[in-house]
Length: 449
Image (cartoon, rainbow, N blue to C red; front, side, top):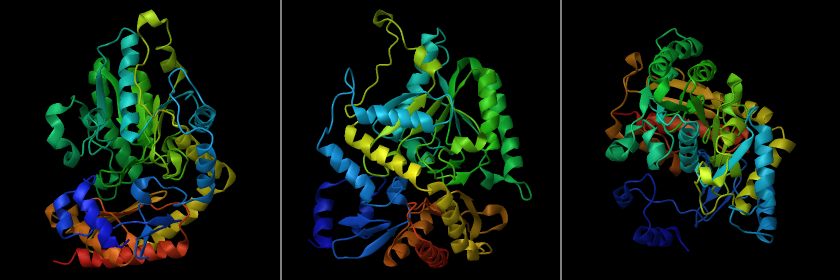
């Protein structure tokens, strides 16, 4: 098969995610036949370095031998079974190991199928908890501006990226939106910690006013990924945990994108020393192999649902593929790699190499900021550095970077005018140097008027 054959067949039947399909009248699809490590290969042998981990899911490379072997072994034993009234070893072992690895106090694991579904579980579980305690008036959620938590209706409602949300606003419940601690917005001379502390005043005022009607605050710890890789200091999480406790409000940590080593620690919440009431996990959970999500919560939450059937307090939420054995085995193999290899220490070296690769852009007149948290690096493109004047989004400057990168055998997929790296952890330093070179070239082309 040739690339053109698959493209023709694809455009005859498929509707792709996050895509204006009319673009593909002039922007060719990239058919992929196979992957190995950080590389993807098309049907004609052309390779692409996967700098975005295939939408942030792939941790240890494509066709990882260790994860492959675990899934193959499981395939011969049990592919799937209902998890209501039944159980199986991979689901139990994975729950045990997630509870062991998570911040202290998270002792119960509820499975779902994907990140958006995990957020839906956490929102429903928080509201239902308060209802079971006779406090059904606590039904609102507080979220940060520019946040993103998924695209099902509940998850979309507690997000704040207009590109995804605006069209569906009439269908959504109302959330309370508080200004983000996003450090890109800080004043000159103000450091990340000071800005994040100052921005917490908005959250404190909101909780003081609305605590009686708020079930939970939901945040993406440290990095607002889909909102342009905007970052903030861990002190905000510390202040938020204390305020949620004081105002009797749950804290939901959406670590779907930032969990499993992306921020430099296994979970981002560790950097603030906090335990959320709900920890949402997905994406890297299975190493990028199979759809799976988990919501970890406390025994206090679990006990609020534990009662005689006739009381109708049970959490009646399910997905057909809840706790799928194949996905659980992929996740267990992923955790084995974290256990057996110095992943986080090696990532610190890779993160330093990532910054070195783009250091020449520090003084570029159209680079407003290079920011980094662990294995997430972002380059904010601007029309003018002074005043942080953005490019018009309709000019699609990031798309020009994407196109150039593909011509050089690299998959970079900017978020608007933000070019970012979020590669698999098996990337090498020479491959990182290639990323930096291609990004610099692409940016030079993209900012030309």
